Length: 482
Image (cartoon, rainbow, N blue to C red; front, side):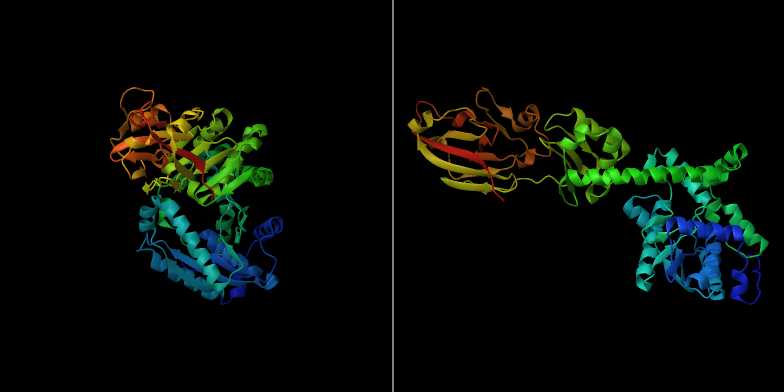
């Protein structure tokens, strides 16, 4: 590390900021309302050119805006040989500029492994956690980060290569909650020129020179090529990202208004949307409504753009009861009037003793079985339409008490009424196209080891009433009240 140019005073160091840079920061602040004055500002300080410059700029503006400055260095525990000297450098700089300095260590490697993330994404998440934790601790009003126009341009290209939509192509937001980025419209070369001209030292992170990461490959290889074609490519890409952000803000208003009218019910693992509004909705808005609904439902995050297209196809052309299965156990189901997106683990039916006569509440299936004993004559007078589906009629003398109700088991079989031969329950469900996530909630009524009734679907031929029947067990299916 080279020498730091000193003049024995904080004020001298802060007076060297070029007017062009200062005016850009002030214009960016005015445009995005980053700060008004009197704030406590926590600055993310790595010791690199960008964050060192940002600390000098805020120090210069301190008297005018009455800032209280803090800085934090986040140690990712990835470069143990370099980190101690970087911390010492940042600490000394903060002492010169009268900013209180903090450090925070985060275990990126273990976090990446636990969360199945790449190292860069894990580092980014933990770094932001550290910023927010310290900001809350010291009651900071803003967290200032030193992203530049170059970072913006690189981010746009990264997301373009990954197939992001316009939301991703809008790049890094200048303001997000309490995070602000005052250098977002300044190019890195201006920052470095300012530091070099005034012999202000800074640190170059060795990992920034490795081409292992996409951002570094774009920065070190692609951007120089693009600048040969258009020297103003950084400005062009940054402006493009800004245009996408403006359009995103407009669409977000439409999406917010649409979604407010569409949510039927919502939990952390599921959301139900009314189908009717989709019928008149343009596909562009439909994508965004679904994306927002998914992003705001914790258990659904991770659904990709391709999955969104599959969901739209289900909405537009699917039949009632159709569904699609997505990764991480997520299911999307088209119902009569709603679209259900859920990651809830399907609930299996419990084991119940049937109350004969009486009522048995099957809470997992949401139904009530009401049973009574009637005569053969009474049974003959009943309209048999719906038998096996909405009610069941069984020869009481053929049943072994108590009757039990349970979910399906491996190897289950029965003799479906009207079918004439034995059939496996698994094959029966497949033939009826019963979704696999609903099969464990379908009640199976048993007499000893024999299946009497696949409740709501088909009774067993062996227990049907005939001319020799004397007493009949009638069981009605009712929807249970909560």
